[in-house]
Amino acid sequence: MKRLSVLMLVLALAVSIGSAETKFSLQLSGGLNYSTGGDLGRALRGQGDFLRDEYGVSSAFALPLWGYQFAGEFVYRLNPKWAVGFGIGYFEHLKDSQVSYTYGFIDAVEAVKPKYAVIPLTANLHYDLPLGRNLRLDLSAGIGYYLARLDYEASQTLVLLGFTGKDVYSFKGSKGGFGLQGGAGLEMNLTPRFSLILQVLGRYASISGFSGDWTEVGSGDFWAFEESGSGHGVWYYEWMPGTKSYSQWTFQEEIPTGETVKNARSAKIEILGFSVLLGFKIGLF
Image (cartoon, rainbow, N blue to C red):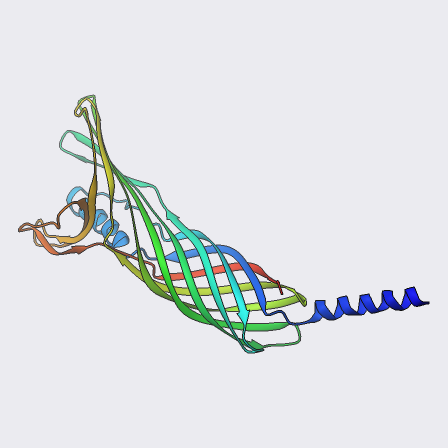
């Protein structure tokens, strides 16, 4: 009888601890991320517009608008309504595309492979709205530091009278900047310490001042060289070869200048978009 009483006491204590609201919790999620890319998207559209106007190209360069994302956040509950969270994540955008055209006796193919990956370090304030016994709405907003890495590859392949040549330029650089994020999520409690989460987040960060290493390789019948270096910046400008303006960007040490160059500045990767995430939250202690 005494042993049974002790066992019942232990079980009651375990249930009590398991049912208690935890102060610290860990939230993990993954899903899709949409981002405009800023000057990256403008430059790809501008180059596509120029090739269409100049050479009648019907296709266009694809924009890396969609990518995948993973995120984690430690949340400390201040009271039943309010909490603070500190998180880290990763999202990546990558898209290969090419366009083909002919001028004179030359057949040309231009290809681009832009990729940018971002690690956001975030601090958020959470506010909970109960929607039922086991369902609540989590509203959050905060600031973040967004560390971005840009990898860019552009190539041109030319074919003339059976002779072929290819020029490939590659750049890798990184830069960070501050931004804002906010969103709303549905949290469904399955147990007192475990819940499922469906979350929609919006964010904005503008990152400029990229500088990095580069290589350029020419091969085939027209070229035979390989060059590399460091300190190339990323520059955005409006190019006016005639009466029409085309958004462009380039990789070089100094800001572009010249009669056909207008409004040149350091190029910006704009983290402007939203994420749709599915995950779970675990109560720690």
